[in-house]
Amino acid sequence: AIEDWGAYYVRLMTSDCCIQGNRSAPALRLTSSRVLCQRECIRPVSGEPTLDIIPVEKEVLEIPKEMTSWIDGHLGLVEDIGASCELAVSSVVKRADGLRSVVLVGSVTFSSRGGGASRAARLLDIHLQRARELRDLQSTASRLQSELNARKHAVSNTVTESFVSDLAFLGWVVGPRGQRIARTERQRRVTVRVDGDTGMVEISGSSAPAVAGARTDLECFRTEVPLDTALADSALGHDREYLDELRTSYETHLRTLHYSREQACVEIEGNNHAMVPCLNAIEKRIASCRAADSEAGPKGSAIEGKSKGKGKSKGSRRLGRKGEGKAKGGHA
Image (cartoon, rainbow, N blue to C red; front, side, top):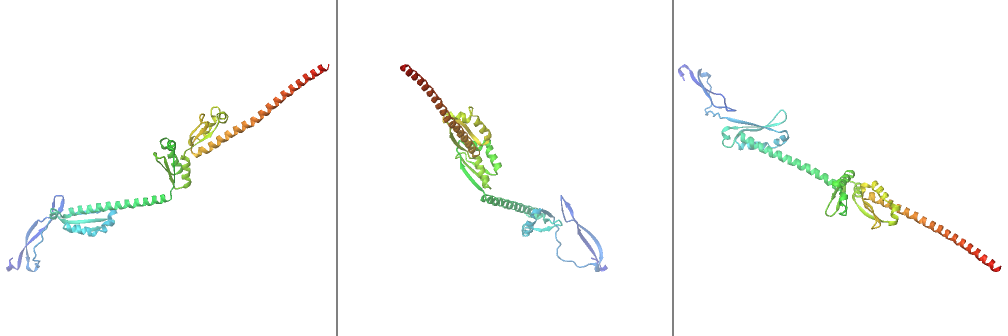
């Protein structure tokens, strides 16, 4: 300082920012210059030492829209992460579009010691992932609970019937490749379960008439209609044409329909859609043939009696004439 002139030499220390790698961070670069100024233009400054300018790093974490409410309720978590990583700034910024961003600013020096903004960003991202997984699990649990409640309500209104089928009929009940059961389920809107070991058939549905109709479609019975061999041709036809007509009419509901000469009966196997009409038709046919035979029997006997009576009268007449002749001869 040149006090005699009433002026001082002042050395000015300035700093600017330089680029290091791919990251923009301030680095100290001092420049000095000397100026001559009057004493009145100099103001006192702090006697504290100047701060060291250190490089810093900044991380900005974008929060998804579905996690906005979560980050708003966990501001304390962001502050705790910032404190543990020794950050200068750790805050949640509300953007103009309504979304959220987390700004993290810290020293590069702390990053080498396990702190820094990059580590804080990784920790916060882990918390976000766990929160997203938990939210998805809660959503799945809520959906499954709703489905369970709906099924409970459906089960409470479900009508169930079951019957035990003869294992010999079980293949007919199921049908080729399950076609009979599939058709019944589709037409009746029911669910059919079959136990192949025990022959148990369970039918469940929301309507009692539908379940009863499905049981009628699937439950198979067997019955026999006694029929003498002598009457079989007249009742069923020489080639059993009448049975062929019944098979054609009730093809989907019949399992077996044939005449057994050894057993002297008509065997019928099928569900009630075919069993009842076939049984009634065959019995009616047999009764009609028997009635026709019974009517033909008395007429034949009456005719035979008349013919025998006529023969006797002629004989008696002939005998009478011969006797008369003898008497005349004797008298003569």
